[in-house]
Image (cartoon, rainbow, N blue to C red; front, top):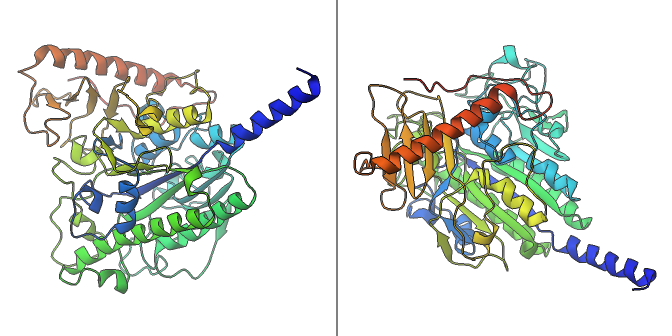
Length: 481
């Protein structure tokens, strides 16, 4: 082929490849239970936009946050690696290590512009303890903002804030929930009123509109505040639930507020003509907060106890399904067939390997990656999981310490001589009622060996590090009985 035509042909291929790069949006709610949305069967809550998007996409009935609380899950989302490997194993401690390869870094390497909006909780956003949230004495050492983690445009808070009128400190725990919004290293101060979800989404939509105008593919994480406490909803939102107690009105209203913003997001994508060029993932970071028994009188912290885990056992901080099996779907018009659902085990660890596959590149090869590529599942092709899903947490004594989903079963280990291990069928027993440990001892033994092998690998990563400049943070779980 003549050189001039070869150059023209390669240029055309490059243009086509660029056009085929979808925009990617990762939506995440905070403490939203499996049973807190209409698309999972809740007939009281009003989530028409989420329900419609789930119906127009692929709904997951076995989607796992992996982390039973927020920071661990968010770390898994960012890296495709279990948080235990690098010490992001609790809240308000540690930071996402600089040497970790995150999804924004991968997207930027392929010509994407990147944005993060909403809650961060993967490190502090300032070194000034007066402007930080919890644990001010460790503010400087936990400094790790998204603009230093490969995000081009940001509008974010360190942790959660009140879901309505965030500047109103009435009934709030101050300074923990005092509002400090940051954008690329600068604190932004405005007279914010109304929905905190809308305040955040306004900035996210500006980012999307600018990217579309510049014809640049984008990746953005949009992490909502609700229905995590302090849970508040405006009068119009509460009025949607007139027959409910005040606490439930606030709780359900905060979920509907999220839904409203998802509706605005979709409408904007349609108006910009890029909906069919955009892949959207939605999930929650863990199960619902609290005991499930709300306090008699409403307050911004007790209202979250109205959260529903559906048929599952356990709640936030548990490795039972109520803590880690969350509402989720994927939406990608023209690629994902509408009206489908999948009971295949999928998790937040899978986001990064799937993103790499979509972009036509390999997942990082220089460190263990715990997630797997689910692109064929999204396309509706035959797919089965080729990696187990690991869980590990030292959050509380009411939950097993480590768990694994493999071979259609879920094994949970207590590492406590007074408590027996547990084995359940993922498909047949999502409520985790019938312990199959004695009925299937050989399978239990195989899964235990598999899980213990992974824990050895994770502990090696935790102590030795898989990237330059890594320093251990937090503490690894106790595995001796």
